[in-house]
Image 1 (cartoon, helix red, strand yellow):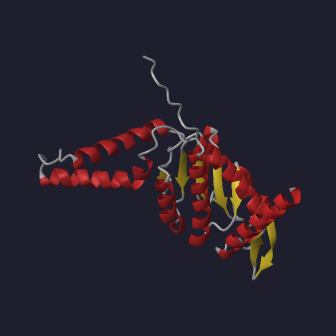
Image 2 (cartoon, rainbow, N blue to C red; image 1 turned 180 degrees about the horizontal axis):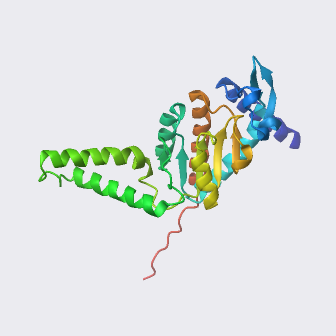
Image 3 (spheres, rainbow, N blue to C red; image 1 turned 180 degrees about the vertical axis):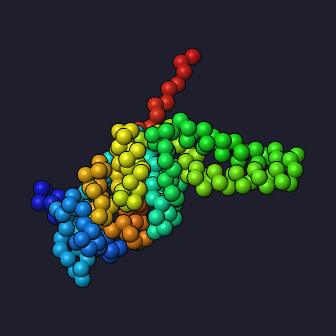
Length: 249
């Protein structure tokens, strides 16, 4: 029985590695760009590009998914972060599919460390959007409505993805921790756990749940975002059914 379980586990791990290989998750950067913390997860070099050991990636991924599963089970919120062009569309789609907030453009300083002020801007945007939808600006002049529309547009660029974030999130999922260094710094200061898809140029020790893999390819990014989303959904589905009480007459 034990041998059978080991065989099934090995087969499952092998399939995962093949899938990661298929999306180019193994491509790192040149050795000159490698952060020292990434040295243990390197497999070799091909055409001057370092190759990430996907067996080790699968181990890191498993740990990250267990954590995300626990967040889903507890119904906690994750802020998805990824401002690079290769990640934008996937981050928005992944976050919205499970009702999570996202920051898919330039990180707004203070989003975590000065959330009380950021929340005022989010609330203001929500208020303007609701008033516009209800037609409450119809009484204003054309110029005034134009100014309001411009204000809404500007606020949406910064805060639209954060409308669901009514309080600080339980964790952040970040694409490319080096590019999103401001988000990482703020989150670490706040003591909030970080899950991050990161390549060989990133400091793996900066985040709690690193997933070392290609963070510059749309296919690779989508592969890992999909698994984070799936783990959260499974965790949420595992929540115990609320007890039904019948009032005694």
